[in-house]
Image (cartoon, rainbow, N blue to C red; front, side):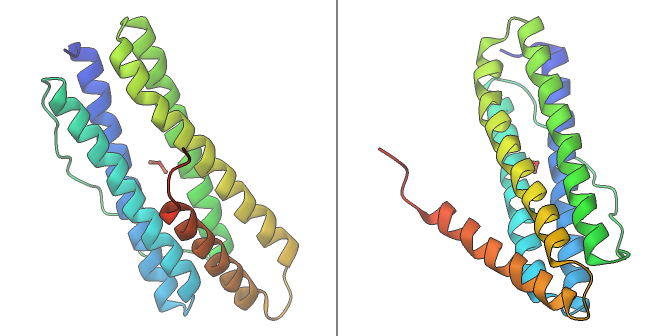
Amino acid sequence: MLTKKMEKALNEQIALEAYASWLYLAMASWCDQEGLEGSAAFMIRQSDEEMDHMKRLYSYITEMGGTAIVPGIKKPPTDFKNVVSMFQKVYDHEKKVTHSINELVALSSKEHDHSSFNFLQWYVEEQREEEALMRMIQDRIKLIGKGPQSLYYIDKEIQRINMEEIKKEQAPPAE
Ligand code: FEO
């Protein structure tokens, strides 16, 4: 059983994850228009992940006897300055999500809600991985620098990182 406070906060997290999914899909569309196919594929996979994060929360709230609220989603931007600032926006959004997860964990402790505390540990781990991934992308972009073909190399690198992520997802779980 969830407290009303916890149920409300978990539903707010549903809305945040849903917006991340929409935002990343909008970024994928922009990347496609810019001919950045590797980055578009990366952002579509990220968008799918966010949808999964949302559905996990939905299932948990329902399992706990609460009401999961399917949110209205604000329209994300359709235009981005350039791919470098777009990835900075992704990193910033992930930091915002991490902050929100940390607040949820703190609330579950305050409410003595051990079940939610345990459930949220998956998100704590996921955010650690997501932030590390986005930080790595920032580092790679800096390394590639601003040469005449930098966009091409950035996109190739993102494509390579995306393939690595897919491989990780498909790897059998460690015994
Ligand atoms: Fe579900 Fe990337 O935050």
